[in-house]
Length: 444
Image (tube, rainbow, N blue to C red; front, top):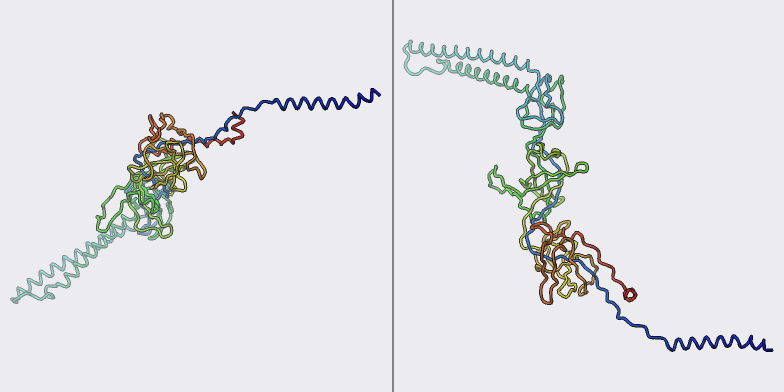
């Protein structure tokens, strides 16, 4: 009986005791300390804007072509008896060099025949002159008065003899010219593009001997859009200008990649073509590189005809403009600035030039303002941020502005006069992720 009561009461007592302990523990617990939630502030990088000068550089491209390309064709017939070593594909030659000789024996014989004909014609002319003088003397001996008739003085025969002499002289000159034409000489200093004939081949007028081109300078046709033309001083030619009037155009640098290396050549824009291309709506200007096959810097190959090159034309210099990273432009005409209260402000600007890395702004910015270069999403206007000087500009000392005062940068910013300012912001990093209130509370 007692054992039965113990089995019944013992669980009841254990449950009651545990309940009492739990009640006392809950009733006497202490309140946890409460901390205010930490407000997350986005960190952004900025660069101070400065007004200065900027030289526009226009990028374009084209193919190298010779200034003169010719096809050598003989003016006489004959067999090729000699070919100079300079008449070989890829070989160079100078003006006046002998490139090819054609058998000239027939033409030298023609010179001899023409000389004989000239001598005979001169002898005939001398005879006619003597007969005319004798006719005049006979007229006077007969006692006739007045001037004798032209037929009496053998004027027609004398004129025919003179004409025969002139014709014989012309045939002799023609024979001499044919002899000279048996020797093919270089019309200018150049290079052989293609050799067609060789020794032993019979040629006639119209036969192509070789194709050659001049090497004193080469030209490159460079297309420019209507927007690019605004910043290039194109050497235009107007009606009435002297034919030899030469206007100095802007300098241009040509670059080409050969294998893993890139080489450059200096040139100049010399003229613009007379019409705008109807398909592309672009104007082609012509760049010129002097002595492209001359020895340049060690290891640099010659600039060959047919080579594709990239060109950078030095355009006009803009004064009093702001050069900013192109990535800092939002929607093409807006930027984000950090105001003196460290809040973001959207500002409309007017870019006048853009390239792959820079944007040049004429109006909308003030020197000393802080331009945000960190990529941010939309709807950030008025958001409080923690600004940090970006890239090479961080080497200077930035003095935080007070309320109502502008920012000031002391020390070097890594920007050189006339160079794009985007380089000093090249080390831009992405903004740190904003922690949630729950994570911030746990971290504190």
